[in-house]
Length: 298
Figure 1 (cartoon, rainbow, N blue to C red):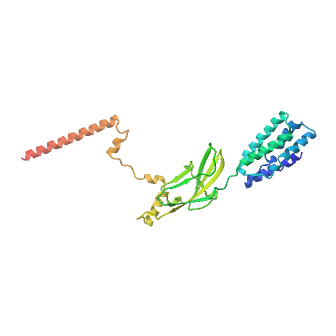
Figure 2: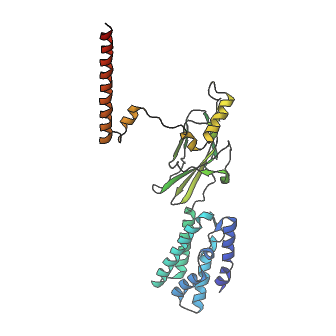
Figure 3: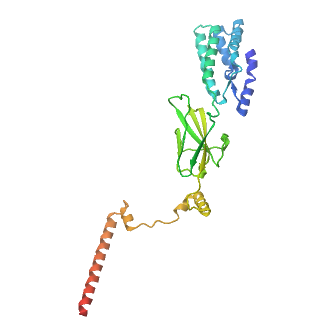
């Protein structure tokens, strides 16, 4: 029952991992329950007897080499799935009358290979922060690429930004950029407000693979003829509510009205015809009055 006694300390350790976000251990006790391990040994050696205790000891000894192996905390769910699959494979092998003395070391070696493949996410890809200097009004482009092979499918890119000219890798300062999705991010025209640190995260199947940082330094004076008062006024307009941009009413011309699809309805056509007829009669009447006045004077 040594396994059961050791397993009682596992929930406390997992709670500490959850709270402090420290690296997790790839141990057998951390990812399997005592009942699961006992069920495997009972299938191999029977419900009771010395052979059962021997199986339990062999189970623990085979995975002893993984006790000090640390993994990234975010990989714990994937490793838990791997241990669950391993437990089911051992039960199938025990049902087929296999030997636990051979099965346990093989299973431990397979789990070691799985752990090796769970690469810890790097804080950044050196150089940790890539500097980019762009003149105001020009274009800035960031390329989220790495020097190692990425999986062919289910690769996603997410971008974040820490403004105010801040150069940092502290994720608490970053905010999401929902409009940026691909491996390329472009800003044009670049303005002083764009100065700061941009972060790109590459994920595969919701697992982060790499994180890159770009620091954008915006240089160059304001446009020619732009006074300090004009700069302040433009900043005020930029932060004004969007409704303020539509305060001026729309006063369309007759041509703009006629160009609208809903303008030439049958009733509007009759109205235009009446107006044209009235205008023609008015011009004819004015011309007749002018000529009468002119000839009466002679």
